[in-house]
Image 1 (cartoon, rainbow, N blue to C red):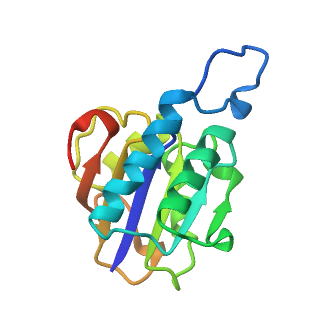
Image 2 (cartoon, helix red, strand yellow):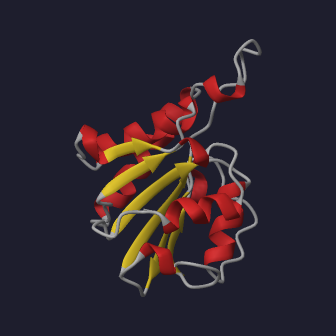
Length: 165
């Protein structure tokens, strides 16, 4: 079985309009939400083998908070530039190319791509993944390349304002 965590970056800062979109940092709420959200996974003993993140600052910073909370080593976090501004087809291609040695991978990225991906992979009907929201999708496969439309089961969906423990 494969498990895919899909995590949207935490709330970013729009205060500095001189920054490129790629370089926007997290705002104070984002810095609070990311550690809080990873603790929810830790409390449920849910942890990926590795993290693959968009290299955009807000996504990578979020991924680093999660890596720290999951107590992952630096080499367990990598970036993939294809994730930034990716559509469903591109994100699926990234997932299908994951190393089968890893059964559980966390993917950090952006909307609208992640919401569309979640709905494409599952029978979920999530209107929008809020900032720092996280989904866990389980697949009955041993190979990432077999993942496609409606092959996953949405096992968990949570976000900072959900009030879930």
